Length: 520
Image (cartoon, rainbow, N blue to C red; front, side):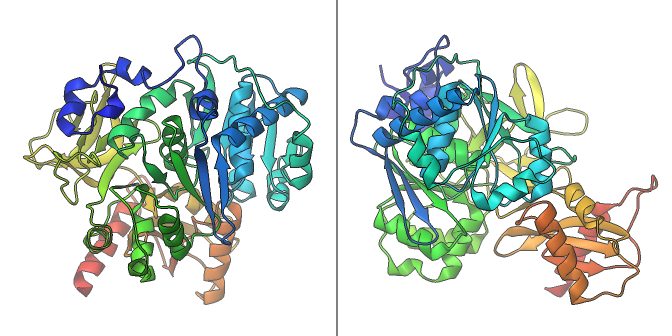
């Protein structure tokens, strides 16, 4: 009987899929299952390269499955020596690197819970997450230690440097794993929410099994692929789709570390002959805008994107440069991938501008405000069936007459910029920390590079100036995160309000849309 990885067509995907067949792709069963074993140790007897980390400074790291297995085992023994117990949370705030991956898999081998954190978080962003997950230990570098300690004076911190790595070598290079499929393995924070405390999605080890739906049909992973994902593993796309899924299939996986440079990405994709990539639409736009892609040979047979729509100019560039249509993959951290364009499936026509069709085993519909299914081409809320209930995605959308779904915008005030999900409320709250900011409202506005960027409307008694704009931007960078600052700041005498006295962001969005239309 064929494994799901043997099937490459859309028709076969739906005809032969079953949840039980996902388990056939793994060693473990429900009574014993460990993500680190499935992603690392079961491939360690081969001579395969596990990870190629393209660094912004050009000093790439190449890591074999055997080395990753040994060094993560040593880290697991270190955690045991520190008294870290199964079920304890361990926060990891490191750039993609040998240190990051050996730490993460070492935590999971120990039976503790890995909590990846974005390295651009400021003290407030770190504090919110630390207060929520209460880690027994945070592993970071010297540069981030001060931010991690701010407001978290009792937090145990391990600096991961050369001296620490040397000490790890004293520990045994094998670790006996004992976890069950239903044990918790990873806390994944969403990159932004509409409340102050970001939500942690709590993943068990068996989440790796259901993840394979996205791997097979969203990114089109198959044995033999050389797969690259430039998204940070601090977020769901970079960790689950970009790291865990391809490693579980024994692939060579590429990651990007440091300040993003599209030319460095281009160089790595060409030099290491990657054949499959999944990235944010912004990554493709930045590669296009670099003007350098035509100077390199590429070896792709599958490409996908997620996180935001991709514009026609960029889609044209991708087709012209790589000879492929780039395939959409849609989902959320909470519900997983539910719509895809099936990269590599010769019998699936990719429809530009669409989110694709439902993945096998998943029902997706568009519902109106009364909970009824919308007719074809009528916009409503995208809903997913889970355990007999319709779950809202918090996105609007429609289904066309061919059964393809199309995105209709966010159903709340979340902003998606360059693939990052950001909260208008959180950014507003930080702006209001400035003594000269009386009121603030934040929306997303269109941007040709990032899809959307943050625009802030601020009421202030202080005269408008470039200095005040810079102060507000730096405040958000330092308090929240380096990528969430408002790239546009305008000063207004008052903000539109609802009858209940709340800021009416929709009015601001409508004004921006009208102004953009009038300027064309």
